[in-house]
Every structure is written in C-alpha cells, then in structure tokens.
Length: 253
Image 1 (spheres, helix red, strand yellow):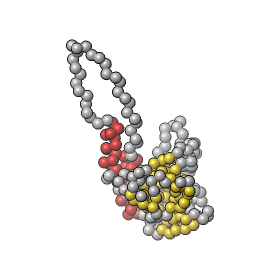
Image 2 (tube, helix red, strand yellow):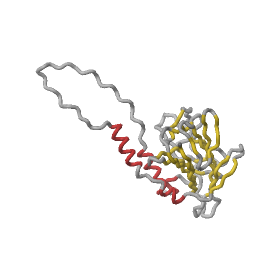
Image 3 (tube, rainbow, N blue to C red):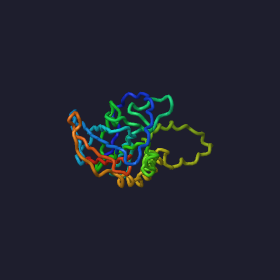
Image 4 (spheres, helix red, strand yellow):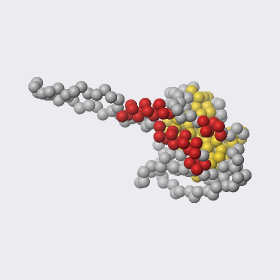
C-alpha cells in the first residue's frame, strides 16, 4: 500500500524563489489542479478519485496553481502511517538537491509541479487498502499559513523511519583459555533500528489528518488538462482565499 520511491533521478541545486507578498482578505483565491497517472506493464493511464490501483503500479502526480503558492503533498496510509511526499527536507550543504525543490517550495502558476521529481515514480508495494493523498497550496509557507497543519507535517517528518541498514555479521568466536573467566551473556535488548521502527510506527498511529480533513475543499470539479488528461480542481474557500486543501483517494488492491 505504501508508495515507495522507484528509480533515482538526477538531483540539481535550484535557486531560491522569492517569497510572495501576503494577499489581503477577499483577494483572488488560490486554485489548485492535480492529476495522477499510473503505469502498469508499460502502459500509462489516468487515475481519478476512487479508482483502483494494483501492487507494482508506478504513480506520478502533477500539481498546478493559478498563482504563486507553496505546495505540499502528504500521504496517509490505511495502516495509520504517513509520509510527506513533497517537498523533501533540504539536504546538508554540498549535497545534491531534488530537481523539484526542497524545504518550502514556491510553485509558479501555469507550470506543472511533478511529484516525485522527473525520472522517478512511486511504486505501490504489497500493503493494500485505502490510500489518501492531501494536496495543499498556500500563499505563505505552511508554518505561517496554518500552524495546526504545519504541526501535522512536522510530526510526520519526525516519525518517518528510514529502513534499518543490513546487520553486519558477527566476527567468528575466539578460543579462550580453560582458566579464563566467561564473559556475561549478551544482552537481548532490541537493536537501535528495531527501537526506531517501533517508536516511529507507534507515533504514526496517532498522527491523523484532522486539520486537513476539517479544512479540505469540498468544491471539487473534474476538468481536462490542455493535453486532454483528466484532472481534479479545487478552489480555496477560506476567508481570504489563501489556503486550499484537496484530498485525493484511491483503493490499492
């Protein structure tokens, strides 16, 4: 059920985009348009809300906004875990950055923002069930736009556990003299990787999309992109039109 990155795309540093000025109440509301495409056995097809995907399908998403806006994509899985699909946290200085940006990414209007970055895809693993993807667009970075949602995103990032590295085989036992004292038996305490996985899984159980569910845009409509592909569009219905939250769901069987 989880979306795992498949393939590795080239990573280049991107120049920082200028921050947009906050809009006054009643200004032109943000509109977000998203489309999802999947590939199965080499054939690509459009995915609409409520469609069924299968293990092994490779997925790509495209997000478009009608004005400069910061975009975030968050995934919630049926097993209670979750992940921030976009944007990634910025790597340490000197390390390559994702081609579609990192940190708080300001998307340009009329330009497709691809998730994941070009050359990559999300592949569905063996875990099955309902999958929910939330697309958010704001005029300001999420930490300023909505602290409750920013807290959800931060919690997800902190509790996402990377796979533990392969265990190193123990060295062969050494022969000890008959009169030597025997060492104490080895501890059966769990490994750091096991502890991290347990803590991460337990914490993720309590991370729910509450603020996003409450604020999600309900005025959604299906449209066609310029290339003829179907897409879903939602318009911000907050007081000043500065935040739009869209939920897209599919069934993984």
